[in-house]
Structures are given as structure tokens and as C-alpha cells.
Length: 467
Image (cartoon, rainbow, N blue to C red; front, side):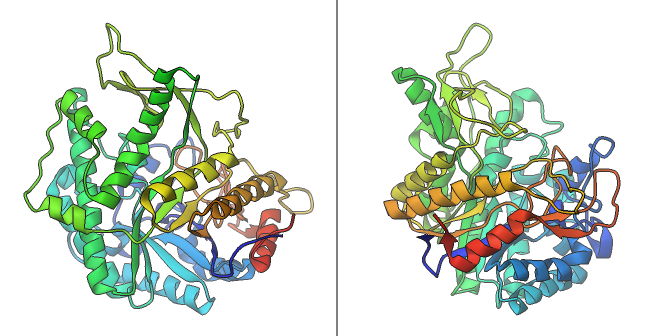
């Protein structure tokens, strides 16, 4: 058997706006994620009900316990704790998460909390233009301290911000709706900087308030292969990793931007607003771990400037191309999911090796999974062998990375049960547990364990995979 150490944590993940529903119940305020989901209400499900975890959490946690989960990584909705982001505390929100945490502990499942998963309170986007304003940093630090004081006696693992390095690429998620195009990169860079500062301040405060707590960021990982052996393409591939992930890891771990990123900001005329004490705050706040979200690899080639596109101009959002640096191209060596993510288990091994060897911090995988359209057969079963194959191959990659010397401490695939996909609603499913609803028909919201549920149950029981 490919057997993992008994201290290795087997879990699963979710996020608040994608799973909870009850978007405005018991005092919860609207978030940017809610607002964006409502713009698509005519074409897919939105966050109004989602998976209705808010009303099903007892049942869902019992299923997690049956599956054998040792850790559950989930997020707290900032706007459920503080509806307008920086005003009055909503006790009903605190009560809800207290119930969830207590249920998890009663089921012998470790709660692993994300403080911010794409769901800035909408009121702060309107009041401050969100993270562009330093007051948003103050608001986030206050929210985090409330969570630490309310839940820190039982929650010891804290992921501060989920996928900041991906979130910052997507104008919609950063509420850059009305920012003029010529100002967008200045605003984007300032927002990014303020989130790094907020992460640092929260880690410093967390270590004070919860001395036995562990704190760290989650990054959307990238592993980019060069399209050819041409030196320019090799450089372009490396720059894609640098601009989309590595610059953020350097800021999290070392407290300063790397030279290539500072040079880029200078070339495109971006000047960050900072305060004198910021550099010490950023350098002092040391993460205890790095959480890694991994779904695919990319391939890139060098992208020169031309008469119409100057240095530093970008096109697209998540997988943006950058003139003077890189352009994403299709990798013909890899198969892709029906939604276009190229499947590459070996890439996970490469990512884990690279991050561990560079930063020497414990790693935990907090997202990894296959999104596809699951079907119920005539017997009422979901035989998702394709998901089992995907997860098995990625767990093998984890095992080999550990053999390589990587300090990988846990695996929490996405997702514990079917939840709202931002752009595909409930057509695209990731869960071990089927939620019986479609985009426009809530049906009975019944929970049905899939074949992957029972397979993962055995993986956890055996602490690994049978050859």
C-alpha cells in the first residue's frame, strides 16, 4: 500500500457563499459574491439557497463523520458576522458558526477556518471601493479579531485569505466594475497590497490571541510548462508562475515584493500608497503553513509587444496574457475536463516540491478536485468513477511528493458536497455527496453519497491507497 503517516490529515473543503444559502437570513448582509451570483440568476443557480448547508449542517456533518473526515476546511462569511463589514456584530451569525464548530468537534473533526473566501461585504465595496481603501484593512482586522475571540478556543487552524493571487486577477471579484480602464492596474495593485498588509496584521494578532494557533494563506497554485525549448518561452513560462503565484508567496513569506514585480509596477507607472511601518509589519508576520489549491497546469510562450499592445498590457482575467512577458497556450500532451481544466497529477508533485523547497513551510492541500456533471442512475446512485480516478492519481502524486522530501501534512479536496459553482451553477459538481437540486428546481435537496464518498472513506480508514 501507499500508506501515509497516521498524523496526515484527511479532509474536504467548501466555502460559505457556495454552500450555505440563507444569504439574507438571521441578519446576514449581502456580499460581493452574492451580488455577482444574482447577476446570473436567470441563467444558473445563485447563492440564495446554494446547497442549503445553513439548514442542513447537522445532517451534513454526520455524513462527514460517516465518511471519516479528520478535518473540514470551510469559510466564515464576513457579512454573516458583520452585515455591513465594519458596523454592528450580528450575534445570530456567531451563534451559527458556534453550532457548526461544536458539531464538528463532537464528530471528532478538526475545524479549519478560512476568514475570507471571495465574499467581501458589499457595503464595503460601496463605501470604500473595497480593498482600494486602507480602511478596509482595518475592517478586516476587526472582523478577524472577533472571530479569534469567539472561536479561537476551539479553532486552531486559520487560513486568512483564500486565493488572493487569483481573486486579484478577476475584475468582478474585486468590484472593479466602474474603475476606468486606464486606472485599473493602479487600483488592482493597491488592493493587492492592502490584502497582503491585512494578512500580515491578522497573522500577528492571531499569534497573540491564540498562542497555539496556526495561520497561513491559501494560494491558487500554478505550474507552467514552456511551449518550446526556446529560452524566451522558458522565461515566459517562469514569468507566468511568478506573476500569478510566486510574487504573492514571496510577500507572504518574506514580507516584500521580488524585484521582477517591482520593476513591472514601475514600468507601467503604478505607485503604491504605503506607510512607514508597513515594511516591518510585512516582514515580521510569518505564516505557519502554506495552503495549496491545485486543479491544473498551464503552458506558456513568450508574448512580445507590438504596435497595438504596449509592455504590461493584459488580456483576459484568470489566465491573463501579459505583453512583453507571456501568453497561455494549450498543452496537447494533456487531457482536459469538460470545463477545460487540463488534468495533470504530476504537476501537483512538481508544485509541492517547488513550494516546499523554496519556502520550507508545511504544506496542506485545501482544494483539488474534478468538476463535472454527475448523473443519478435508475438505482438512485451516482457512480463517479471518473472522480475516483482523478483523486487517486492526485493522491499518488502527494505520496510521491512526500517521498521526495516535501512536508505535506494534509489533503482536503474540493468539495465535501456539491455546491454552487460561480459560473456553472449546479451543472458543474465536485462533491463526494450529491445535492439533489438543479439550477432552477430545488427538488428535495436530498443528500446522496456518491461512489467517491465510499471510496474516500476507505482511503481515510487505510491511511492511503491500495496498489
